Length: 306
Length: 301
Picture 1 (cartoon, chains in turn blue, brown):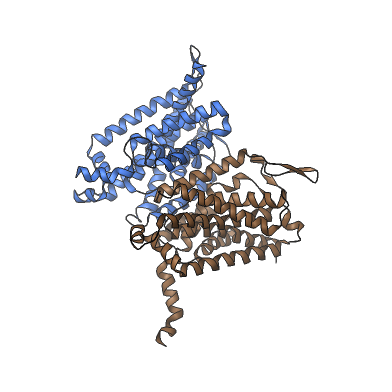
Picture 2 (cartoon, chains in turn brown, green):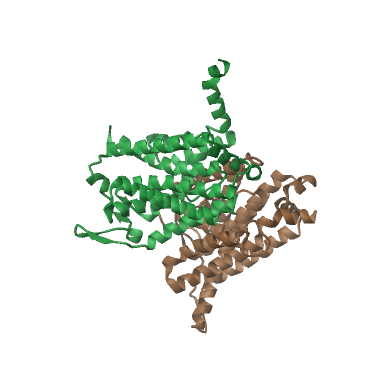
């Protein structure tokens, strides 16, 4: 019984670590732009499709290890490149203007990228190269799956790097100032356009890494991945509080644990229902998110600091 | 008229109901990603009423609209303190919950020797009331458009009324609207209920035209498309959503020219259009200019 609970928690945390990265990417974009990027999932799907395309074209010619690493690089680079396209087309021209228009525009581009990806690989299910020929390890009664360990390890590493980048560099300071208060950023001479673009690309990269972790665990990519990864990123971000990076990490982990326990208790059909239900409840009862400082209070916080 | 044309024109009409529903909320300053939920609820409710309870078609459609209104009003009341993105995401969460709950819901009865009714992910087949009552695809198409025209007329008259002006005012500047004495929270709940009713009516028509519905038809794609149609067509007039639907379904989907590339073309066009006109083709300024064009002689008389 206890073992089952610990095992479920472990599975949930591993899934949640990937959700956390998806949420962090999403929330960083929101933080600098105050806009929702609806094509976020589609750009991640595009990266995943490039990785699968590589495997289907060059799979036989490369050693397994090289293929896995190359697919990871291609996926993350693809997501970042698609992010560049989205930022230039949907967000840069509409900066400081209608937020709804930018959002609808990014939705239109979602459809565009999704259709383009399925044109690259028309099959519904496409195998994705994964490094796990290793069997699961047994630790007493617990099962440790290699993809879970990889996810946790990579997620922690990315979180540390991102923390360093945001807390200990000029660029990070600019990003944080811009997220806290665009007016303050302008007053101290931060180039908002350039900072937004770079932060957007960094966020796409983080999202791309999260997507890669999910794809190697699933060992496949389908056209549903765009919608799916956007939903997970969105829920992780909102549970933790819109615009807060530590919040998105906590939200992602919580989402993973909630889903895993829901599935263990009530079966797989309830899994998604629980995720959306939790989001709805949090929004109605505590719109600023469960943890930490939310965008709700960001302006107040920034004013106090000034 | 060919079957293809009748089907296409009926489809444009039904999707316009969801687009109008998203438009009404946009005018009131709320973005909703979840109007597909009320379209779906309306479709299920109307189908159940006419098929399982043997209600007449008109009552069934009214019941669908009422269910949509109750759903919209409930979500509107629960989220009345939320604005902007928070409201948008709450509506999305509710819509996904509705879709997933319909996936789990079974309510079947034997009718004429076979089990009829919602059957989870297998959907709800055999909603034949309209056709056993003698409606043809062509006459049903006319019914759809008569109801759509009626809905649009009500919306246009409403927008010219005092409450319509209050609604637009609350959308543009809620603080100012409150200062002018508008009860913004209540207005939002009522608008959400009205938007739910419009989507629910469209859903009832959809269920009876296709005779088959399933939860995955009412996914977020439908809702976000509806929102996009509303804003592409323009936020200045209730004709806007119809124009948005016409551009996408009428021109791009039905023409063979863009086969396989429709979304690439549509997506690119929308992105460029919105850089040029962030509030859509028929935005408020354009509508004012058009109106002036028609009323100029009167002003000088």
